[in-house]
Image (cartoon, rainbow, N blue to C red):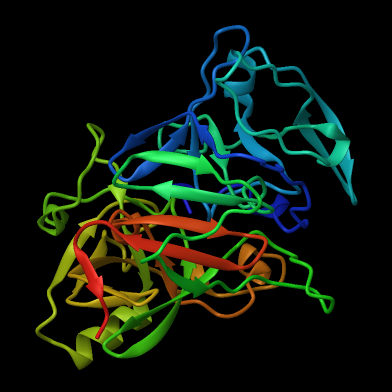
Length: 336
């Protein structure tokens, strides 16, 4: 879930489009302080910059692009009817050979992208999010700084740990959403979180004690936790470090910057690592209400697990089978 929570009103349609891969394909990307940005080059030489965000926007196989970026890149658009909505979509995308995105098939109106009026944030033109990514298998190689679309018959290598992912499904088991719930364990207790490669940080001077890598604009990655859960941890473990006014991204909490809390140890997919810093977010950000994006989750969550955790791994997300596979590269160990 990137810096600005936009386009969620169009994200509840089922992401039915797929990119069928018969062999491994590297997606053109840049890697900046924990974020992957897809950087396809169009036939006219324009380069797009799309943050790869599992908690981000889209619908029915579309990625999202801002209207200003579409105009700059010379992309034609038109209106597309989807249910009761009339949406502005990109009609065609022509890439330079070998420099494009994997093509989604079966999208509404045969359109590759949804044009939105909001600012995607993170100095990006748009997002590859919960509309575009489902239906395929993706490897986020954080240490190698590469993003791959895996073949349909992909198999995990020895030493990789599997963890199931929660996905909202209908009564026949078909996915109804592109959002993923992942279970971590803190202090021996399970905690349900959004799998969020786009969880963004903007630490204050005080928050830089967390040691997260940031860009020249002080943008980095984090994990999110609700105010109520942070308060519980703080009451139960007063020795855990808390930084007041540690992050100034987005809406203020209690009228000021968000707090940070340092969790000494976290377990995910059978791997233990730590310390892990979490950034406070209001409970309302993760409370399901009719029509909001959390209604597309398969169960309650109390935050988001971001790339300050995933950066230790090669992580493969298998959307069709509802599982993630994590191979520890650095800074983690098998959980006891």
